[in-house]
Image (cartoon, rainbow, N blue to C red; front, top):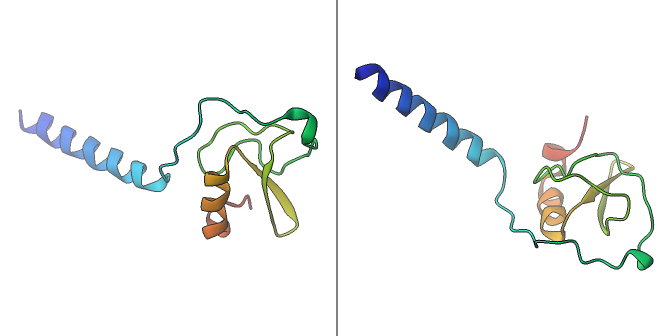
Length: 91
């Protein structure tokens, strides 16, 4: 019984620690950008560094940090990146 309580407490603390690492960002259900108005770009990141969604070559939300272009699924993720780019930038 005591081991179950300790295991539950340990898992709870672990989950809470992981939850604090990733900022909470609400996303729209679908990407509604007009593909004809966007340029195809090559990004440094294959996934959004904030929410970990895959990036696409036609994403309009981008940021340049240390001469590298990063793609984001939304302006919310881009704004979060700009607050502390060193935390999210690829080394």
